[in-house]
Image 1 (cartoon, rainbow, N blue to C red):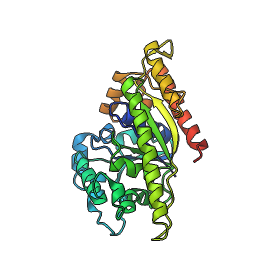
Image 2: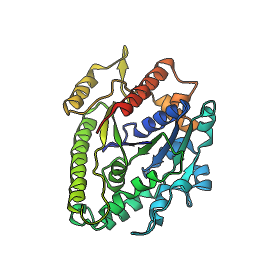
Image 3: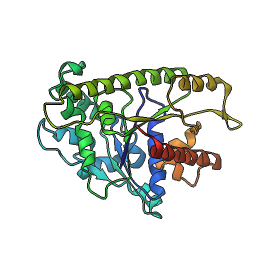
Image 4: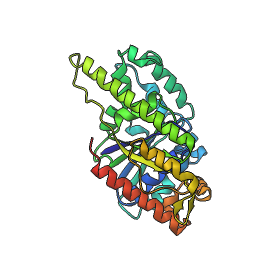
Amino acid sequence: MRVIAVVNYKGGVGKTTLTANIGAQIAAWGKRVLLVDLDPQASLTFSFLRPEQWRAELAESRTIKHWFEAWRMDGPLLPVASLISSPPVVNRHIASGSGTLDLIASHLSLGDVEMNLAARLGGAEVHQSTRHYFDVYLRLAAALARLPRPGYDLVLLDCPPNFGVLTRAAIAACDQLLIPARPDELSTLGIEHLQSRLHRFIWEFNRIVDLRSDQGPVIRKLEPVILGVVFTMVQLYASRPIAALRPYLMQTRELGLPVFDAMVRESNSHFAGAARAQVPAILSDQLSPALAWELRRLVEEFLARVRTAQP
């Protein structure tokens, strides 16, 4: 099972759209895929479920918010399997193969959990208080590792647009990272800041592993691999990004991060309609041939990078 966190320091970059389309296509190709919505905006959740269905079936007790709230410090690890739902509409589109697409839904009050977790860590300067450090950051990783067999081929974690506790817990739980971004000045700055924060968190986590190496079970150091930056909402002309966007593509490569060859073109009509239909655009029979080819090329490149990435 590969666990991949989809992260960006900035919102509005197509993070949820990318997660939904990659997950749905891989499921349609016969794999078992689990999506975990860690974003309080719950956009991924509402990409697959109508709000009334979410309220009736999940909102009271079957979201990731309730899993965090039910956790007692130093208590037993609560299973996340009871939170898993199978969105019916998209799975009817997948049913011709052997794959499935499952979801652990978010909640609009998940932001309260973020504040509670930060308090357990001792506030914003978490490195000053390490008493509950691993209990907070490794709880999600441990829960995913205990999912019932046969388990999933792929788990995608849709993270909040920040570098708070939930995002860091996702990084501690993942094998690899995917970074969606728009080719503009703010996104380029956001990627650079994300890169800095990511390196700092990994250094901090691994330093505390060393400091506490003789105080309990061996804890694996973090070595997440960055699969690459995927550019989204790209304006194309003659199948190439327009000239105004190319400097930002070059600036991102100069940061030393891998960059996907495949991109996602700007197409509000297709992607907005997909959310209403509860089926990602990549599975829609209304998709233009050009966009369908581009999205599938992106998923193929994603899978190739997942297979070959090494820590």
